[in-house]
Image 1 (cartoon, rainbow, N blue to C red):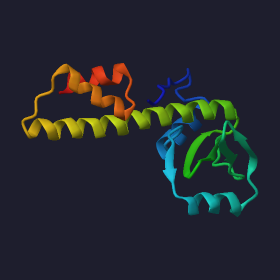
Image 2 (cartoon, rainbow, N blue to C red):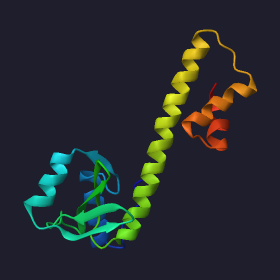
Image 3 (cartoon, rainbow, N blue to C red):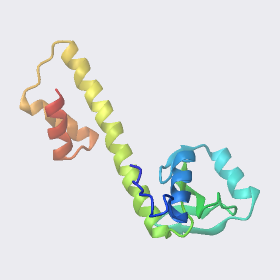
Length: 155
């Protein structure tokens, strides 16, 4: 969600608001996107990485060149998956990791939800009725009770 800004008494935005508006218009700030290993390795090796660390089994580094306006690209590696995100250059790695974990949790729920919904929709198309006990099969997808309740409401 984009932050709203107000003009000052002179009818202009202050510097930080102007740079935020510019960056929001040109980049997807704070949005994690999955990249391939080759691109990750290229970014790792093109310039020396800054603040390369492993935090809670996630390898994180900041690209050496800033994008400007106080923003940088950060690259993350978790097992065999690779990600890129643009954030404020001064953000802490703990904050990046928190946002990254939220992203992964949301992504995992969406993947499970889509799979479970398509499974149940296929069964419904074939005329299968689902008594309450049938929802126990959802435990195979490691869905929480709130996720199961949500799916029940969609069927």
